[in-house]
Image 1: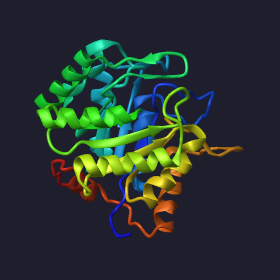
Image 2 (image 1 turned 30 degrees about the vertical axis):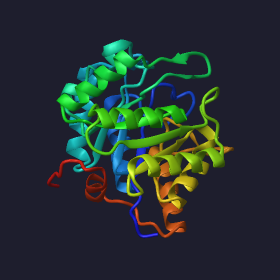
Image 3 (image 1 turned 60 degrees about the vertical axis):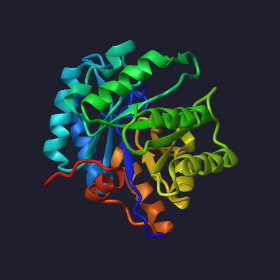
Length: 279
């Protein structure tokens, strides 16, 4: 394969703590340093959450602003993708940072079950988040926890709620949600190609022990890959990951295995139709 693979690093998320792995970056400074290492290792997208002073997830726009500023300064050209995930806030609070005009933001276009709660994404909230992203020229990343979410993204694109070709990420391995199943994965890929065209970029994320498996499936199938301490704190069953960069390096090795070049930040911006920047 010759098409470059975009590597997204999900640096901290809402759940992992230093008790889970001391390498999990919590403070803004830690996140910037960890992301810079991952950027140098080959990641071209940083998927970002922020924490409060107690290490709890928050949607505080001021903290997102500080993180975005630091990443743009120390990881020039890297795509900054902010999370509107439901563990960090309620309702429109989840999109309160979109006025910062990040390159991208995640959006879940439908509800799904999580291990202990319903990850609720009402039609009203989804429409509002999409509207904010259009207003501030933020490209959405569709986090598909279910097949219906891919079809919902198609409907939104057809109505103009999403500008351009949706960038769909399959999220597999969350307990009570979509399990890791190769037949389902292959059908997801087929569905994206059928709905959005064979050239439409897509990504996959595997949760916990499934991260390596989904990295392999995505890269070998021509898609893009997500890794990082948000989804998985281990390098293998018995060993904690030393850093986000270590997980990125493992993903780079899979790219080498399948003879796919790792996308530079400039190539990633071109593939995803994002604004160009000068390094």
